[in-house]
Image 1 (cartoon, rainbow, N blue to C red):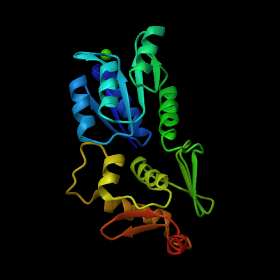
Image 2: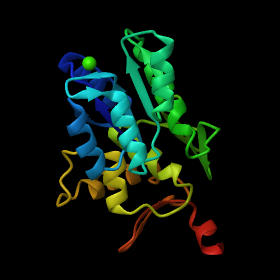
Image 3: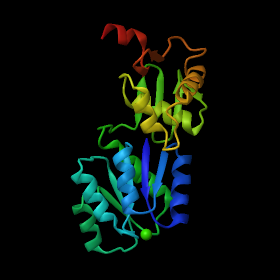
Length: 229
Ligand code: CA
């Protein structure tokens, strides 16, 4: 899942980006309203974290503009002021949740995950595909009861594919949600990661789960259920 952080304090932005990357999110950052809106217009974000006080305006304005432009991703506001008026303005401007600075990073991650579950109606944080279990709450993947050790990016890719629940995910779509703006569309990174995942998920297990659909993308499903549907 890919997140945009709009935060003008460099240390705070760096801290958030680093922490969220360690949690397997792809993260882009913007230091003001204008850059944030530009990045949101070009890239696809699953969630936006907005600081309220920005050099060229307020995070509320960014939230309003994002909504006016038809963006439905969850928005989490970071406010330095614990004022009721700010919270109301935030929610009225289209934000879904807010955190008052200073906040606990673990709480931010918990809120981010809760917000990301909402739009997809994934009430259950555990996704099951045949004998593969992706626990999105603990970022833990098992197949046939065996724990599969994954890097943060490998986990991000499998979580994204699993969230599609058997549907094919295209390469462009995968790069938009699993990689950040440093991703080079000309690279073969996705293939490399899919190969690695296949080694870990499918090698030594019965049926293959990770399939390449030529010209379409990748699919995480049991072959037998694909053929019968
Ligand atoms: Ca600020």
